[in-house]
Image 1 (cartoon, rainbow, N blue to C red):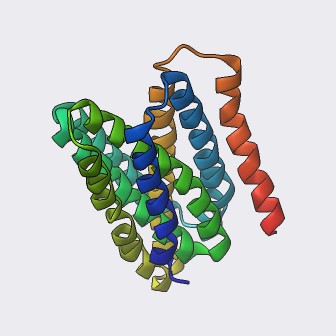
Image 2: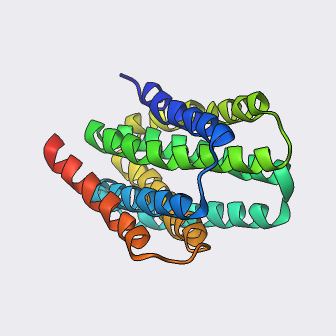
Image 3: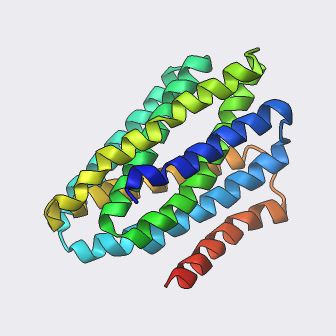
Length: 228
């Protein structure tokens, strides 16, 4: 199965999350728990799959250039997030996040099927949360339920587009692949440290909520062992 086809799984999760959120808005504690869990899963995918493949690429310059471009891109997203407010800002930043997620997934499948499958699991949980967030914000702005779900569905179309852009990486020289892996690693770490966990800590910490990060981390490691 091609990488873009796997993106249909997290895309469906995002639409499902939006449909649930417009009918039953989750409380802040539950949202924080989901954010912690998603952060743990994505962090495990980055550390357990992308990082080892990057180290095997064995190119200092590819890591430096790809990682540097990743940092610049993520700082650009952060700047845009601060400048754009309201529904337009939310949709723009979320759209960029989803496009980058798709790109990273395409790169992961180029590195190996196992890495791609595990990252699909991680991004399914993360994009599910994005669907919940977008639906909550748009719902508070007065948009109808159908409009909220429709806009979320339109956004997640950027996921397979990103995967298609990342797919050709597998045909490039190993050194160039290493640069793309470095970019993907930075993007995932930014997602964990500057988005999911930052927003998760806007709610007062509870021990069981904090533990969800490690639950997500361990579950993905166990899944990796089961796949072999």
